[in-house]
Amino acid sequence: MKVLYPYAKVMGLFFPVGKLRDGGSCEFITEKCCVECFACSLDTDMGIESELKKQIYEYFAKTSPSRVVRQILKELKEAKCEIFTWFASGDCPSKLTNKFYTIIKKLDTEGVIQTGFTRNNDLWKKCSGLSKSRILLTVESVDDQLVPGWYSLPNYKIGAIDIVEVRLEKVRVSAGCGGGYYEDHIKAIGKDTSHLKLDCQSCYRQKTGCFIDSL
Image 1: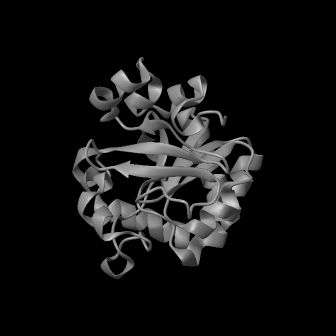
Image 2 (image 1 turned 90 degrees about the horizontal axis):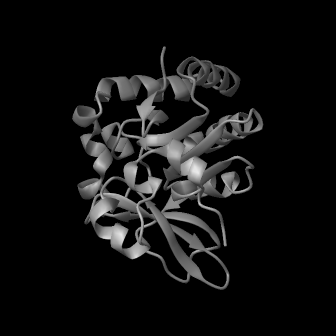
Image 3 (image 1 turned 180 degrees about the horizontal axis):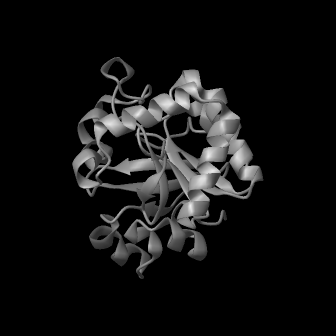
């Protein structure tokens, strides 16, 4: 079956949205996210229906990592796409953490550029040392409890994401992701950059958005 579908001008993975008990894949979802999450509208806005998301989720749960890797590589080649974004909707539940890391690590060694947002802290930690991939941990607020790394902070007001780098000596809101960034952030940054356009290819070329260089 086909498992990847276009998202942000690359290929993305769509899992069912919501709590596990409701058939979703978002084990670590917050109550605010339940109400505000933009991915809940993807069924109608993006053409990826709930039933298809469930089929893709089941495929990942039941298929061996090596076979999943082969399928992803095949579909990326067919789409002539070098960038893959995880969790265009949904997330990785704890029971699949090790399996997903195995897949992500293998794709990284194959040279696939990967990005994505997750609330799975264990998966995020495992992915922090990968060479070509940047997986961000989604949090509801930035505070002194966060360890150094890259985070995504939902900006529910404008329907987008703040990308935050936490370092030992400082916290930096470095960029963002999502079309809603236009009106609110052009003035702040002084120019229009690719992360405003929900375009992973442009962000990678220009080293902004998820791919912004560390200080």
